[in-house]
Length: 50
Image (tube, rainbow, N blue to C red; front, top):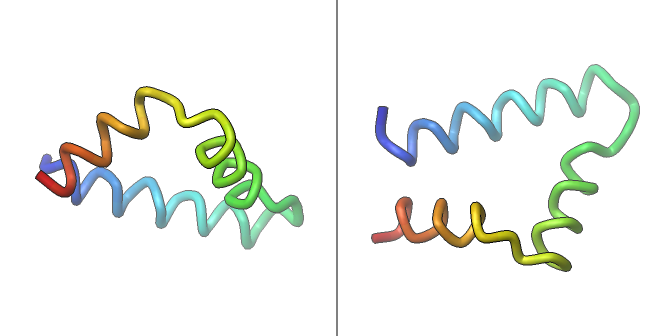
């Protein structure tokens, strides 16, 4: 499975969870990524846009 496909599946799952659960899960994850800049996100970014 390519990284783009994997990322798309994760985003769709997050959107489904976000619509079912009334907590803003995607917003919390986005804030975490923006503020902490985790290594896994940078690696994923480089895999997708390489």
